[in-house]
Length: 198
Image (cartoon, rainbow, N blue to C red; front, side):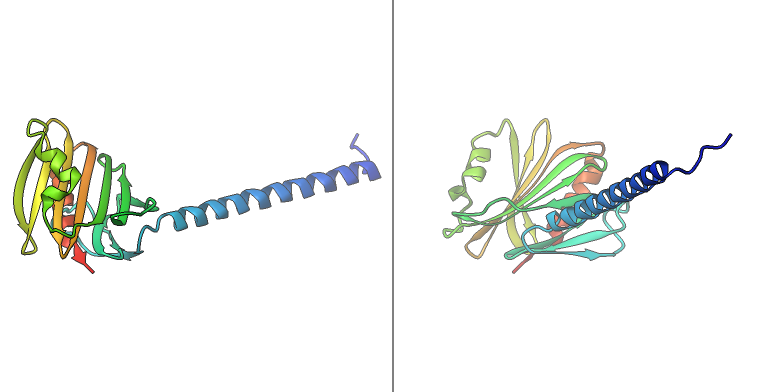
């Protein structure tokens, strides 16, 4: 025998429907708020612009992003996510941190600092690497017609470019674990070739 539609049963049904509707609305609002927060957190110092360019040096990446910073701009593959830049102060003019969990777990840190003397030996990070040849191999290179020193970690994946330019120093570091050192080095090379000073 079917239950009767009593006023108490009808009121409970209405309350349940309202509760379910409210829960759906709250869930949708939370998802939307999370999306907005991730979108806002993705921008670092400067504007991140999507570039849909075919890759020539790293064929596994079909899409690149451009980070247009206040002092330095560069492009990076779509496997990286830009995080909000850290607090800046003192000699730090720009800092961008990007993470990737594509073919390994990598961190890309791009920092621009003041270097009034133009001498790499005045930078403590560079000086520390020169003092530890058992840990770092330093190689001078020319990138875009400018003198750059690349420090490679021995026994771990770490590449750091020290790039002095007009009283500033860009320190471009890529480190972490990678499934393919060759592919990761190609990504790093592409990044260095994409650098534009402002």
